[in-house]
Length: 268
Image 1 (cartoon, one colour):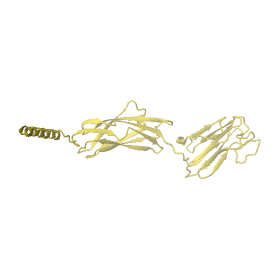
Image 2: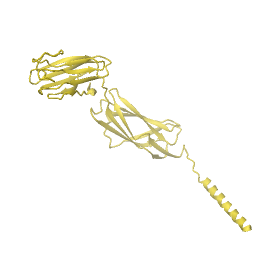
Image 3: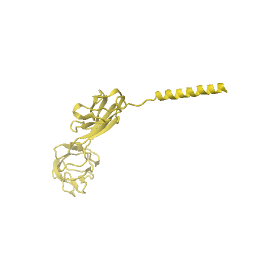
Image 4: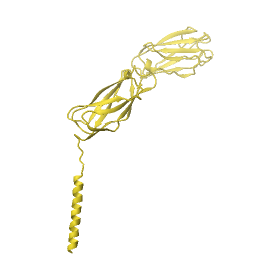
């Protein structure tokens, strides 16, 4: 009996030692002076930039706090295709006593390529005031591209028209046919073209047979304008559309297929 009690006492003492050891090894995270994990809130973002410019805010988190504002340090990765004039980076800080800060990336419409996109790749390299710094999402890819409104610029739009044979327009009919149309969002339809000597047009055509120009006025508040070309019966027709700012936004023919005319809204 004595041996059993002694053995039981030794066993209980061992359990107490183990529990005591576990309590001593318990790790409590230190949010002030402990290791800092820094990370972008995302690894990639698209930034479409209209003519008036646009920006995107990206959050940067740090797992510890600090008693004064911390600076977020970045470097542009050599793999970036964006040039320095195409973007601006600002607001690179984490406020005092906070865990989250932000960077603001703004795109410049005029500097961006007319077609396609360019990429700004940023590496997160430091957060000042951080201890034993390590990183989570440390690379951010921003894809910048022009985002152009399909609403037409109000004002005078010029249509320059040509016929290489010099006998006016024959579009969807060998003797004449329909004209180029522009349909506005309010239901207004403009129809233009060179007259044909072979039939009377049912719209106000331009009398020159080889080349001529006409103007349509698009008012304020129009949400879209759809241009449609009826066709080119003999492969002789050409035309260009010029926006109020003087830029050519479409150039077609001769020999173009019938259908919608693609307008470069970024140039208007």
